[in-house]
Amino acid sequence: MKKISIQSCTICFLLLFLSGCEAVNNSVEMIIEIHHYKAAVNVGIGPAITYIARSDYPGPPPGWYYLHDTIAGFDNIYRLGYRYRLRVRRERLPIPPEDVSMYNYELIDIITEEQTDGSSTFELLLREGCYSCFVEKEGENYSLLGLIDIICETGGLSAELEDLVTFQDCLWKKGLFKHTFSGTGVECIAIVTCGESYQPVIPE
Image (cartoon, rainbow, N blue to C red):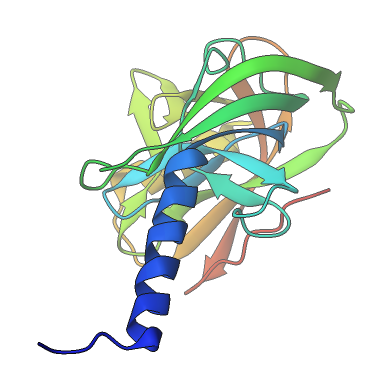
């Protein structure tokens, strides 16, 4: 009969202990901040509109990050132009489906909801080189993936958006926007060509 070494027993014990901890802590409460606008990003399975969030809870990266998950109880009440501090419950899925996050988020309560300054501006990616165009057109109206209406006060910007939808080039382009605080729209102020890459600037 083979003898089992103390080292092997120790490793087995640690593995069982860690797996037990993960099972116990599969559901946690945490505080997260949600930014006053959403980001247009490519999540691997295609272009998407996603929350910009940050949290002091261990796990998420430091600073602002893209939260690709939905938040049950919050998605339908979120308003562009407002910054939120939320208490949520995060549940870790034991076997997440393919191409789906390992977490489910559920709103517990809204701690604060603050409207931003109407003069605040922010950037949104409009085209990701040869890969993705986030601008869509329906009739005479433009939007980001059909989810955020793009309002243009000048004909020149409308023409630039038309070019984004019509012509396929490999340049990265971003838009400078501000909030309208009405419905689901944002006002486009300028469209800028970024060249062959784009580094998002997320305001504090």
